[in-house]
Figure 1 (cartoon, rainbow, N blue to C red):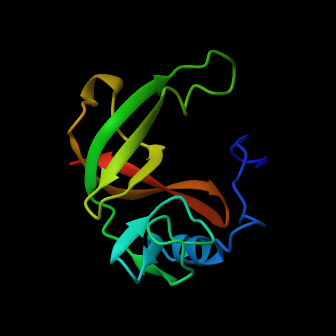
Figure 2 (figure 1 turned 120 degrees about the horizontal axis):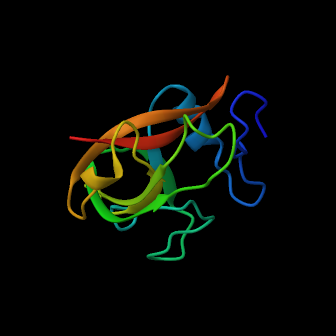
Figure 3 (figure 1 turned 90 degrees about the horizontal axis):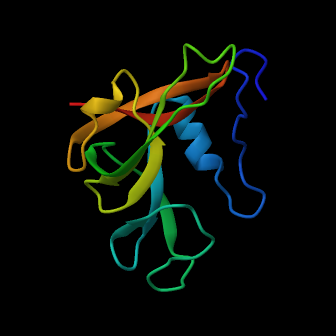
Amino acid sequence: MSEKSGRAIPRPSVYVDTAPFWQAAARGKLVLQYCKDTGRFQHYPRPVSIYTGSRNLEWREVSGKGEIYAYTVVRVPGPGLEGRLPLLVVTIQLDEGVRIIGNVLGAEPEELAIGRRVELTWDQLGEDVQYPAFRLV
């Protein structure tokens, strides 16, 4: 866990090469796996295409724009969490056709609605780690 935030920081997978995702995130870019055989994105990362089973994959940047597909509001009572809660956890249907889970930052729970448009922002999890998050537009 990060000493600064008290939250667990995700690390690259040992089963699938996710280094391109983390390297791009460090530069403020969101990249996802792209199946070159079908012209479709997939997320979460896998060693093969979910469409064809081939390894003909590459990482491509996506816009980070989309809409709320589903959401939940997480409220956890306890000392030291006042500045981080409630957490607005969303599943976003990206314009590129895949879903990704993240948080909505800078919003109140009553502002969330299925179909509401969002855009990419970044949640700083540690000094050198940021994770995709979203803000309402």
